[in-house]
Image (cartoon, rainbow over all chains, first blue to last red; front, side):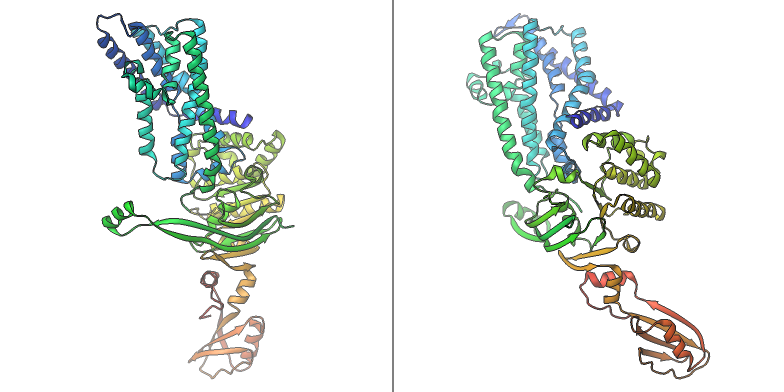
Length: 263
Length: 331
């Protein structure tokens, strides 16, 4: 455990090395969250509620979605793609640790930093200018934390699975780009899925994406009944198991076909 | 038992053949023509504890591919590798715990951290205990003088400093085996000297087994007690440099200059190649006759003004070995 914790710490130290990067990302995220909140304010108009969700709940949903997005930023896919392309994956493999362990703990280090650097300022800006993003109750908050942790695992496993493609395909960035947009659109992170047509909602309930954003956010604003919450978090957990099995299965074969670029 | 044992190792790569120009590029998008390249072709060798072995060969001969297979990064197509009895592919984590690797062209140090912080990370990754860590750090400092830049961020180090940092990093966990892949590439004379001193010292103090790939003749002459020469994926030579010289270039050339023109005799143990007026050239086998003996014999016949001995250049010998030539021509 000790080496992995230190890997996370090193990641935090490196994240703090570039100050301009930090400041610019805060500014960009705050602008983005303010813009999407104004979109919802305009969309609601004089209405107090739409499809059973009040305007304030919707704004809380939006602010929390952006906050969650900072915390769910995964580096694993780009990390693998870049190190395969540059050949530095060789150096990762020379360490007596699991290479996916390195990638996971680097990402966990990034989350800790993103929480302080991005999530906290975003929540403050949201609370000051839009709406205080308070959870429905303390119980809802705790369930949200658990569900968000599950989201992290699903999101990380999907990212790692996509990242593993780059052991086979050298240029993977277009694929990663497509994946990013798919998650943004189909997970309810920008527009909640209850605004989508019924047939699409049915299709999406069989895919893992909605369990990344929509589920924890819906739990947070308290629009799900206890039964719905339990059922959906159960499905969320099943997705972790499914993706986890797939991950370990593919991981076994993947390093065997490793391409190390350059002399 | 040898520390490293390689038996009948083969590595094949599948490459996609691309046609020429835009037309070829478009064609290869639709129809892939695959070609199998054999980078390493049935090689076998074993290395004993404490040896310094130069693993040399022209670019593209399969050196780096072999080193990558030895360190568990690449899987061989067929054949067997054992390092201290373990397969680097099956027991990667246990094998690399006992392995230090330095690539001259890439660094294992963390770009954004100070050198010392990179060492701290390695200390955790290899689970080095405090006493051993301090001891090794002190030893590395004594050889490489890293204290001068241990608090500098790695991205601000010069190439020579970075290389020294990388060497120290590779030795922190006291590995038994050290792979150096072109460690002196791009370094100035002082930098090269520092690295050679380092290799000799760790070999002497810790009996570390070193395998070194290099194109630098100085590295080969100063460090390698044994050379394994690989060319086009197969081993063409395995032995000491002096044996190689004796075999490929057994002759020395003696240039003689006389005060006045005189016909020089034919010596029974040396071949007279030519004579132009006062200058003559002899070729002799250094195992059959010494230069001193030859000069003494010749000076009985005439008055010598000057002489000069010529030996085959190491560079030419190595090149002859790369091209699988049995004897060096010219000399």
